[in-house]
Image 1 (cartoon, rainbow, N blue to C red):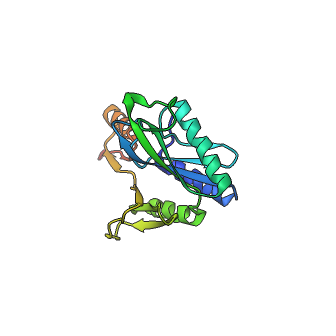
Image 2: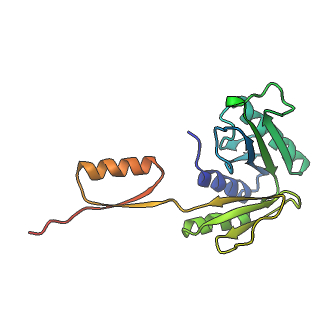
Length: 194
């Protein structure tokens, strides 16, 4: 199972808070279809442990881990292209697609904690990565300034809530489908008058 976006960012924050070297790889561009949506991320530690997936292929994700380790070792952010148009001829993606991944070794734990705090408070927020200046910051939904060239914004929205009012098999089935679809579910059973 691929961890959700919050789990990847929480892992990245935890890696940073424990003093581990870490890279955050973000899927920023795709040509054709891709097994993961734009903005998907993978956190990689300096020891090679990773959370998340960007290509849906074992060899593609292993290459991202390898390149992330090199970026950590050098202390420099980098770009990586996989699939169509890539210098890695032996790495192919489904449907002949090509993807570009930005590997960031400089996003700090405080920035990630601020982003996750906003998410916990159910406020839309984005991790904005300036690929030219190699900086990152949190942008709140009230900031209407469009990103400039070289900036990538990874929005993190609160999970949708579903309030189920009722009880019995229908309420239980609806709740199970909603949870499986990623919704936050609250059930309010009907009280019968006596």
